[in-house]
Length: 89
Image (cartoon, rainbow, N blue to C red):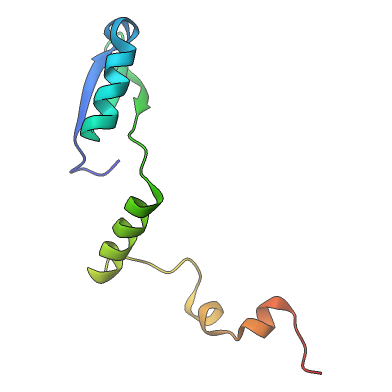
């Protein structure tokens, strides 16, 4: 969870009593809920992102220079035929 992500801490007893309302709230507000037991965090309920929201977040990160490569530069620049094991006929 990033430092700027909004979240609320709810004791497990309250979560148990109001879980359906809390689920609705997470879906509506997109706010993460941390569930605690005896004052210690034990679980996290996070809103699901649609595929469109995920794509938008990735595109924004790439535009802002926050995206990273999943492989090293040498692998990225390697011809696809080499990676796939294809040979020229």
